[in-house]
Image (cartoon, helix red, strand yellow):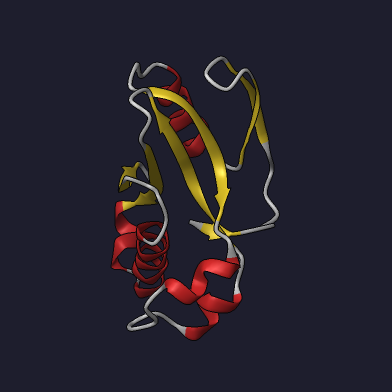
Length: 128
């Protein structure tokens, strides 16, 4: 999960699953998107799925910095599974799990998506 509108060098490629161009913000996200393209259990996906600030009131603030509730965020991937369910994937390097800010952001994401109709939320450890 990262801040919405964060300036990055965009990477675009054609996604057959989405029937159009997909814009990603890192080589790691591109690699994961290419992985998703090959998975029969994924019907389509969205990169950089925005969190609605209107739903932040449903997130328990315990253990999460107040500043996070004043920031616009996007999750790395919103998946639409072939069986109709939806899931979230947050990409994170294993060494970043030692950082309190990373853990807080992941917990913020988990609590947010638990308050919606998303069926599954997972962390994907990526090489760093």
